Length: 195
Image (cartoon, rainbow, N blue to C red):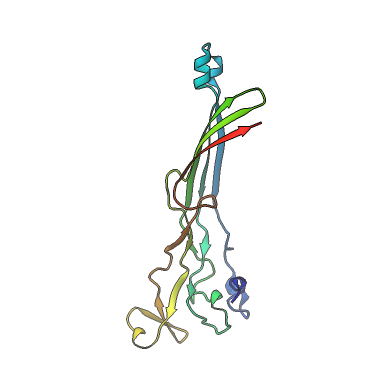
């Protein structure tokens, strides 16, 4: 199977059944970013006070977004087209479930130190996902598996002649992500020389 198999329709004879939200359909996304240059020390008469209190910047990016859609799939090839990557749970449309919301705050504190008119040092302290929120970007999409024999009793569902058993881990997180990196909080320090 190719990774492009998931892009095919579930049933080529019923293309309308694949009508639904796109894989990257995100209804709401709010991003707020800004830089606050704390240049209040420039009016102070003491050069020591200006040196200690001057050159500071606060900045950050706040992101809040609604979840993205995903489908409930079967763990087997229901329609016999040799592509099990498109077989959704019978009776459910495409992309009917949504991942949880995404919220992240990435603050930054910068201290600018002028060496000369041309050269400057920046001391930077920044954090990504400072609230350490688990932002889920991937979930287990297998909703049912086929079973046979003694396992085909109790909590199973019989659909299209197949005995389906619910997968308890359906919808549970498989990956988290912030800014292309790991999902947990990241703190980092940096020094930048500008010339």
